[in-house]
Image: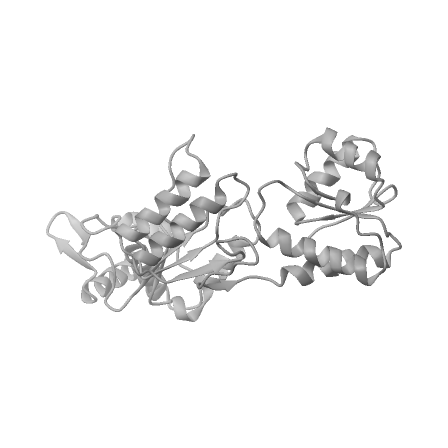
Length: 306
């Protein structure tokens, strides 16, 4: 149950929170609303405040009362309200997506609409299976649109991403991509994309190390990373060219940053003065591995991430 927040009158906060739960499907048609006593505890409000919010829900046609039984949801979504599915398999694992979702929910334009998170499979299900299951949930519902962050870090990511994109397209559900394209560069596809300028990001962090005097720089990314990493690697190479620093293909590595053997081999065979990491998560793992191997950061080797 979503808790109320904000500066609106308390009864409006309770009303809005319960309405969002109904619109999102968290409270489905036929579900019983929590009792007044439960709502008082949940929202820290008086019985009078909770009663007014529930009456407003009744007036809006969202709930109905049954004598002696309580209040029940009458419809899954308020008239005119739209529901949008979040298809983000990496939510909770990749740091950029939670602020994006918070920004969506904080927008005044979202007040009359609902973001649906969907439900994932139990333990043991693959990320590919979870992504496809969420896609089918949103098609079966159906939602008004989907915010989709294509899969990464799995061998079958490209096939699953294309399958999801085709299915949503066939269902005529609009899609906005988050952070990355469905297909690897240079293919683009037709959905709108919200992301950063990855090539420039790769250039800027590489240039940062060059300005500190490091010229032989490695680029490290995990295997099966998103296509955004290719653009960051392109920016890394461009910055090295601009600085007349060596551009050696052997310095570009797709390795597990927690694999001490792989990191040690890179350091001992290529002798980089610094490492440009595809993202902050990779940089954190590389740093921990370097420290475990006895290297000092930044004394022995410099490190930067996005």
